[in-house]
Length: 293
Image 1 (cartoon, rainbow, N blue to C red):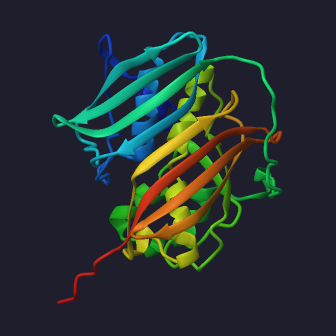
Image 2: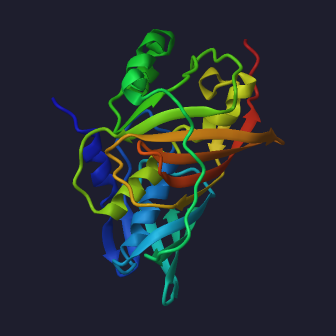
C-alpha cells in the first residue's frame, strides 16, 4: 500500500477547532513512540495561534518551553490566549494540555508587512543537495545493528527529506566539529498557504538541532550513553518561504555543560536568503547504566 508521509503531516497540522480559542491535535499512530515529538507540538501550537490572527500578519518570532513529555496515545488540547492585538503587532500565548496539565507553552508574535533596512550574514559554502545522499538511504547500512523492534521506526518514510553534509555513524559517532550542515525540505510538492510553510519549518527545525551538542563528544542517544530532550525552542522568521524546495540548515553548539547543551541554527534558501534563525537548549545528561546481572 502506498504511503504519503507528507499528507499525514498536513493532516496532523489540520487541528480540530472545538471552541473559539480551543483546538485539538492528534499524534501519529506509531507503536514505537514513547513521547510526542517536540517539533509536532511546536508546529501544532503555531497553527493554533495562526488560526486566531488576521490574515495580514505573519509570525516573526516564537518562544516555547517543553514542560512535560507528551503522551502520543491521547489528543493534545491547545488553548489560545489573545495577549495583544495592536496596530502592527499581534501576540498570542498558546498552552498545550494533556491529562489536565501543561506539557508545552508558546508565545508567538505576528507582524504586518513593513519595508526597512536590510542586511544578513552570508550562507556557508557547502555541497549542493543533489550531490548528497538521502538520509534514510544512508541509514540503511546501520539498520542490521539495531534491535529489530527499532528498525521500522529508524527507516520509515518521513515527510521531511534530509541530506547531511557530514553525517556521523549514529551508533558509533566519532568526535567531530559542533558545526553541522544539512539540506532539508518537505518530501513532495505541496500547495498550501504561505503561513503553513513556516509551521512545517517549525516542525522540521527540531529534527537535528538537539544532536548538535553531542558531536564534539562522540555520543549519541542511540548508544544509551546520553539522555536528551528539548527543553525550550525559539525561532525568528525573517522571510516567506516555500518549504517544498531545498533549504540549508546550518547548526552549531557554542556551549555544553551542567547537563545541558545550547544549540543554534540558521535556515537559508538555495538563493542564499536567510529565512529563519533558531535557538534551543536541550538536556544532555549522562545516562545511568544499570549493572549487568
